[in-house]
Length: 69
Image 1 (spheres, rainbow, N blue to C red):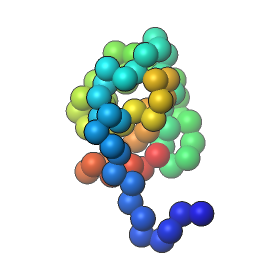
Image 2: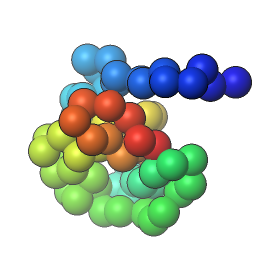
Image 3: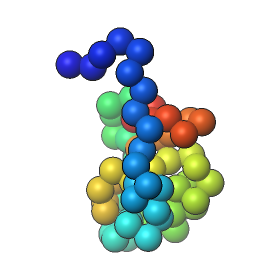
């Protein structure tokens, strides 16, 4: 159960776009998988700080360094 007011700040390794290891990457936001992206697009989102790596095949939405996925 999530604590009210809890904010998840992704760890250092989750900000490394080189952790993405598949050609197609799931994109998650607010607990829902929104789409599947090409690797280059997912890498760009992580580099810009719009997303973080969840696993090698999934990224999560992020705003101001805090997860919104």
